[in-house]
Length: 149
Image (cartoon, rainbow, N blue to C red):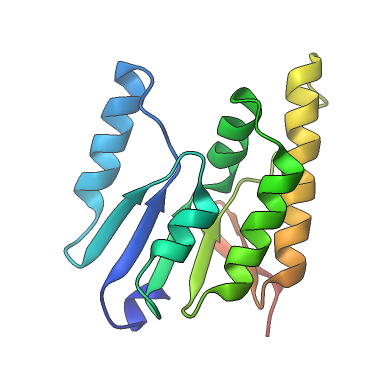
């Protein structure tokens, strides 16, 4: 989808390399990206990163699940940050693809933090899907249209 838009394409990464294994994952992910991508790292201030993307540029945010985890572990106000993200998405002048994980398909976690995260991720996904023109769920590498224009 993004490759059909003119460059520059903007990749907003929310991951943080807090250990060697994650640093290796990030390096491998960067190596897979072809020329034409501008990378912005934004583990917390995603609304500001979206606003800073070139006007009209296609943006890929990877991923909302890590962003939410970063917010929760950093004691940010998740509700306020989500509202700011919604406003930033409304203000975007170009196509935006958001990657997120569906974390509610498994068993209920056995500890309170993970249950709060699971619930918050579900609410975040619902709020953003309600605004989105299209929602695609990937199942075993196959796209399943959940919401189409």
